[in-house]
Image (tube, rainbow, N blue to C red; front, side, top):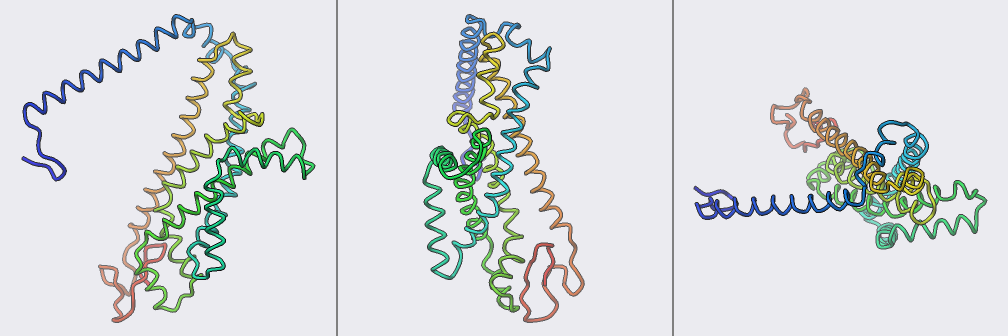
Length: 303
């Protein structure tokens, strides 16, 4: 018996796989025990170091919650600014006009090549030199600016790739019924590309949330990760416990984002498929009028 991808395993191959599995489990258990022993030896697992997070609300109210608020605030502002900019420049790279396509490509490639940390530092220095923004709010502006400049370029490539992934027949059908280029992009291509682009956009949102930590490391932006140092200093040098709690919070936030994106993608696909064949079409979705091209728009109907 063979599979499409590989031949079925024989008795020796099965024995080898069992042996490899046992060895991997033993090695993993040894690593876990080594880490556990090291932490226990340095008293990092003592209950007194973990007790503040489970018996008191002070560390949550004083350090964790304000840091989480700043992290989510910076990520939110960065996303709502970067997303339309990315769509604009992504569409610009698809333009038939060279004077639009080339500058859009240069801008996107430039900011995609520069590290986001450098963009944050440059933005911070620019705000300090040429604006009157207070020193308290300047790190937030610098972090959001750096995240926008980097992530809009990545989102532009996501938009361009999502539109390119659609069948060319959609554009041809739009032209055949007299739609202009702008109408084709807004009413035909972009609505269909959203479902294709959604997983990549959410992945980039997760990157934005994590990259806010760069502002805390370099520009004293009071985000979630930067709360570890003062929190550990005030609770008996429990650095491992603080990092563990903060890491779990990052996991919960990012898991919630990806879960919501997966649900939204399924809902969009299900909602599109649930639309029945409208009047004037045959069960296959093709129009009854001979010679009229079928154009699928966002609500799933053939026009």
